[in-house]
Image (cartoon, rainbow, N blue to C red):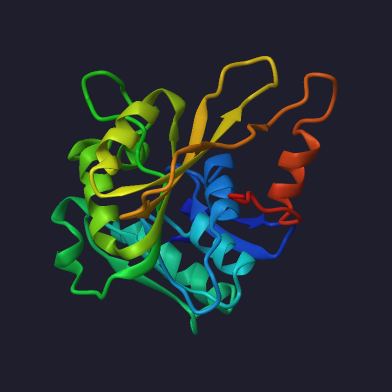
Length: 249
């Protein structure tokens, strides 16, 4: 068990999920919640999350999709240990597993069969010289070793033909995501995420189908905050509480 002096225990999905996470390292937030809400795995599907950290998105997705089976991949041993603790803490050992490995090594290095779906919240930055993370403990979550190309390449190898890939990332990297995934995936569906209704999108959720051929679809945006009052918009609050999902229809 991780050193409890360095760990907090938080609640997700209106208390349905308990999450032990580092007090000083990268901490789960809205991006993880949105990624979990965007997981639309069918009953019996096998789902992989690349870079699962302590398991926030992974466990929330598992709670939302109780008939699917999940695997989380994490390269940081401390985060992987916390993820395993969280799997047990939430009684999900029978359908959630944690494996240690590095996205840069490629999917084949894991020795696992391909999945029906893969999802990820890749580190947002590629160039260590362009941004200094706020703390050394957060560097791995901020900087993508191997760049975004390593993550998209991994995800493409991780799913079967017809399988889905779901990514949340910076909106200004949308062009890169489409270019990197577009060679072997298609049928893109995009959902912009705006901090306020009158502000540009800061995040984008991208869903692609490996070997998909359907035209790209731009879905209605999700607005996170209401300038007139509450901390979150009604739709965002419902998602955080687990009362709504982010569908792809």
